[in-house]
Image (spheres, rainbow, N blue to C red):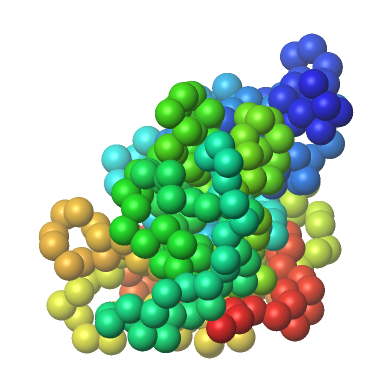
Length: 343
Ligand SMILES: O=C(O)C(=O)C[C@]1(C(=O)O)C=C[C@@H](O)C=C1
């Protein structure tokens, strides 16, 4: 086993170390975000099969911390995580967000090279429906004619549309629970006709061929992960770093301006909003649970602005819940100017 494989396969940890649960298997992007966020010799890293399993491990106390994907800069919100934060059946009442991590995500196409492969031309054929196709940033390392099916996490398709449209148009796409699970499945397929979109690390770990590198549409493709825990992190109250907080709420959809009034609560206290999402309530069709993220902390609020805004929110909603406050890790300047879509 190479040293890279050892590091990711079984990080050393003391006996009875607290557990970090992450969306696995090993070598998923969530795993990489988890390893980048904590001291690997302090925690025991345990892969979970689904994001739901991560929430369950944290709520039950089996895991001290959980790491889950939240949003991608190219493809938007990770709806599985929003669904769990919506917590319609009150299964995760003690789960709070206590941190975040940003990871540069560069996708590889992994599989088996066909025997006697030739270098691909790298040209995309114009068709009637797409007379001037967008030019992918990268070309395959070999012919892809033998590929009959593709596996990846649903979030990854939308991050690689240009490459897929140029080189793998019409090939069956199969959703799996994570990119690294896709790599595992491809490894097991002895026909060599499957490929996965996953990380370069997954190629190393599963011994797969790299059929193409950096197939994401944008060079600034970044995924944000949330770190979750059970209950409140008292230490967070003392941190002086810039903070963000997340709340969920429902409103009376018949009342004009109800949502505007909630949002105005933040304006009234000069709190900047950083994201807004929604999911269906699943009680009445076309009514929503809203998620608002804003700058500021409920746990460290010397000016009382967060308390003021949340008091005001509570007056305009049917129900609401504070989901956590944590250190803002977005380094805006590092994301800016990294280049983007190239056509
Ligand atoms: O499948 C993985 O490897 C994950 O960690 C999940 C996930 C996601 O859900 O956003 C993480 C990063 C990429 O954006 C694609 C997939």
